[in-house]
Amino acid sequence: MNQHILSTTHIRAGYDNRTILSDINITIPPNKISVIIGANGCGKSTLLKTFSRLLKPSAGQILLDGTNVYTYPPKQVARTIGLLPQSPIVPEGIKVTDLIMRGRFPYRQLLKGSSAQDFKAVEEAMEMMGITELANRYVDELSGGQRQRVWIALSLAQQTDILLLDEPTTFLDIAYQVEILDLLTDLNHKHQTTIVMILHDINLSARYADYLFAMAKGDLIAQGSPKEIITPKLIHQVYGLDCLVMEDPVSKTPLIVPKGKHYTS
Image 1: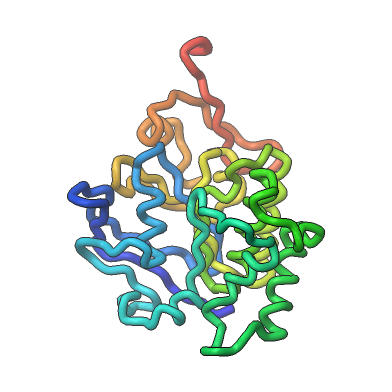
Image 2: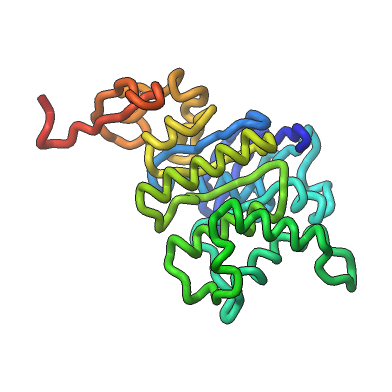
């Protein structure tokens, strides 16, 4: 994998006439796992969409290796940046293998079918996600957790240097959440893939992230390693939640313990 640098300069973005992000400046650490945290509606998904060119900012620039991402051909961007959006729509009547093969589109040559390399990439992605036995099943017959694994496999089959994942542990129970995050960590360590995720579980975010970006109301309010930025003050600023922060006995990363109104002593 190459060391690509994804960054933004003073971007503003939103939908219709409503601004969601205002003057965001971010540089994603290459070859690391970054997690974006923040309350619902703070602009996390909007930021991922701007990174991947799904949403064009109204001001500022998205830069890939210092060059405006909109100057690159779409297929070149798709070979470098992969996105798993939140709640993707499953095409009707499609089998698992066929859906994952769509991740190979950026590598297809005009009027040519799938290559041996395409089939190998799909096979490896299914193996990583533990869904090889589902290859010939129809996606719309699968459980929510199984579908999520298929979507992640599609992203892996794309074999990009940068992988953007919007809530990849959605629909998964805690055991599968940990398993998926372990697999993504393996991918990062083995291939040096730059991974940027949105996760709702703050403790899993602190455990698996090399770097955190904390957002509130469309602004980036803190960034750094979990140990550097996770404090009761930040959690209150981001989520409006009173908490204690202690050391996770397993990972030695920050562990957030919510207080709640019934446990204030």
